[in-house]
Image 1 (tube, helix red, strand yellow):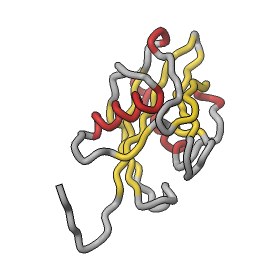
Image 2 (cartoon, one colour):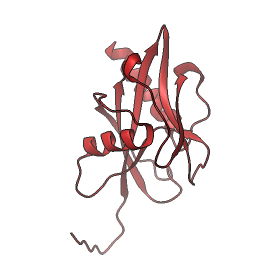
Image 3 (tube, rainbow, N blue to C red):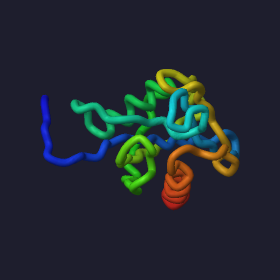
Length: 146
């Protein structure tokens, strides 16, 4: 497919927020970024969608590529599109969230993630992009649904 437009278009990404319960401690999955922007910072798994995949397929692919985690039922949370949320370009992210089972939640950093690790929701490191805002919304949604 080839496209030509008279004016610029935004990029579309997906970000994935996955929670699990480790005993009584709720945890969230983060990756450490391998590349700029925010190299070495922690963020949610995610990335740009491909032209031939749905948003959910992109979320499942990015989660698997960056963390090795599969089989998590994901739901769409919200679209985040603040003008300067990504220093590379005008980027709109469609965020998905889900819950992993503790015994099926082993992760490893891969692709463009240096590391993947679980952090207590209440004590995450500083997050890249607008991911703290995303975490707050996802955590609030999960608490309402529980």
